[in-house]
Image (cartoon, rainbow, N blue to C red; front, side):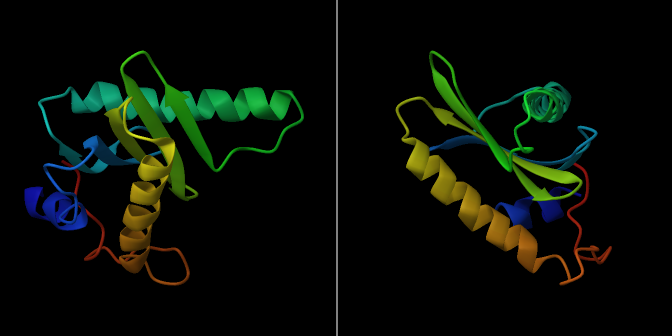
Length: 133
């Protein structure tokens, strides 16, 4: 379980800009995670999935297409949630001082790594799926 999470996010530099990286199902179930500090995994994952779902619903109600990613900036941090496949999200959090481009580049790199673990048809091989953390 721990090993699969470590393998997926093994390229994250512990001294780098990311504070949190989660791969979650649209339900909020954690597939893999990496955090610099102790965080409440269930709260972060469920609220990230809820946030993206709420923004999708609002966008569609306004006649806008469903977004592929959502970027949020608070007083002290930046959050990025991006679709990895129809039923999974990548959630990254960094200090607000970290530029949006840096966060997006990190997301692209990690999504590429996740995509390598999935067959071309989008259905994951159970041996390649990161186990829940």
